[in-house]
Image 1: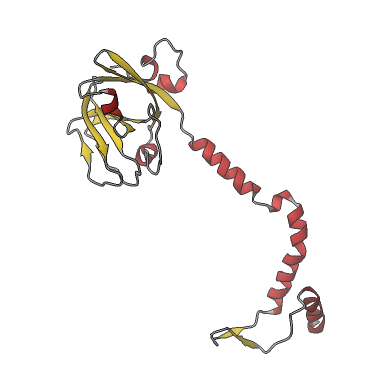
Image 2: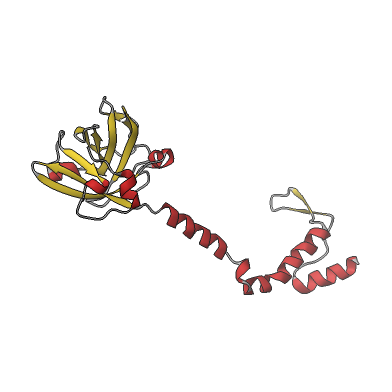
Length: 217
């Protein structure tokens, strides 16, 4: 049986030969020779390799499909949001962070943000919220919004990765994050009024997400 095994091994591996019970590594440390049973399993795997290459089920397509599914699920939908400043309405399409997991993740690791994009974090019930910039690689404007829709505080161009908490010091209905410097570009000031969802664009028929998450002070 042992001779038959080495005959098979010699055919598959021309350089294979019988050796002592122990072989040495390059540094001289003894290394036990692999048991014949392990070699037979190795040979069996090699024998299956051509068949595996021919079958889609043996490829990484399943993993790729799973990754695609995850990416699709995590792709955020947006809702309309408006800020009225000096009689002018500025329209944004922002992502909505509702769940604790979404609010914890926020805009971490994002490398860019559209000029009229962002993310809104509704607070239910309203509370004194503190935000930081852990794992956030781009500067952001943080707008803390009171329950009447007015902006209580604009923390402009918050520093990436900073761990100092930012807070308005008063209960807020939401926090809005925009691209760093965007509020100043548009002339948005503290005291300006914010709406989102169905009431932000009343002439547009909202979908379910707008209706569930509307903020109409």
